[in-house]
Image (cartoon, rainbow, N blue to C red; front, side, top):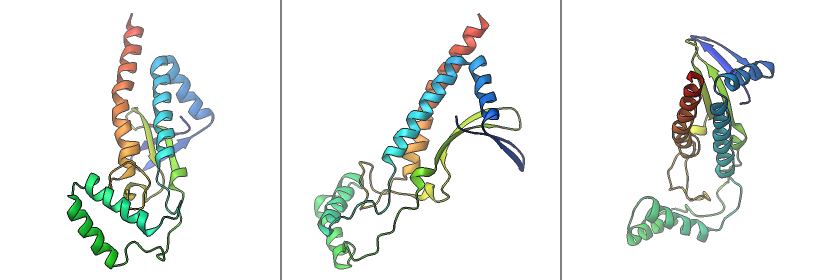
Length: 185
């Protein structure tokens, strides 16, 4: 883990370098297998999230490509019939929703703000965290122009950070339990 944060009420402190090494060494001694599993799981989640994170304005696309993506999003992602999706797309097209003359915003770099760390709570609980420090990261959703297999409207932080972290908790809990059982023998 890259950094650690200790929080008690309104006061918090971050440690890095030697402080982080201290926490990591403690984990290696108390739960050596679990520490490796935690490190591997969080690195896997972080790498996958960085690879799949949406980047605004990465590529220019034609109005026809936008219509095709909107059709796929409406039929596959939202469950609309092809006829209803075509009607919605025609309505959007009449309003100019697919024109390239609309200003394309450039990414603010939230992909580079993904982090992992360790938090030690006021009651001495150790928490492993993964997140994105961009204040708007939770609000990023898959849109018509997004190049991804995720359904339109999906919040990417939920899909790429939260859900994989929840799945990893079972793997991590098993590793911790194994280490604790070994230490009792």
